[in-house]
Image (cartoon, rainbow, N blue to C red; front, side, top):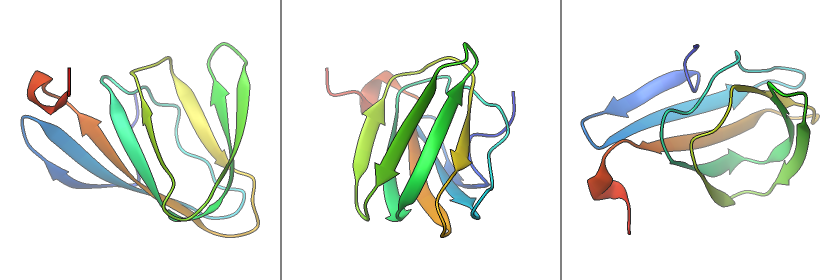
Length: 100
């Protein structure tokens, strides 16, 4: 599998933090999150998540939006907006980072 974001900013035993930037029309490599994660939108935009099973999820994120996801199936994020899209992804690697 490919990297989760465009640049790995920090990593330890509990979290891994990625920067993800996509130009208009850009897309990530197909990747899979191995754990729960949270993303925070730094530059808003419209994206589509293309899942390995063929399902497509369209999303319009505003500045500051934050979403938590569980680990999932392989997918690819497409920037379908007119501006640069950016978010910060925090992967929760350890049981200590989970609130339950």
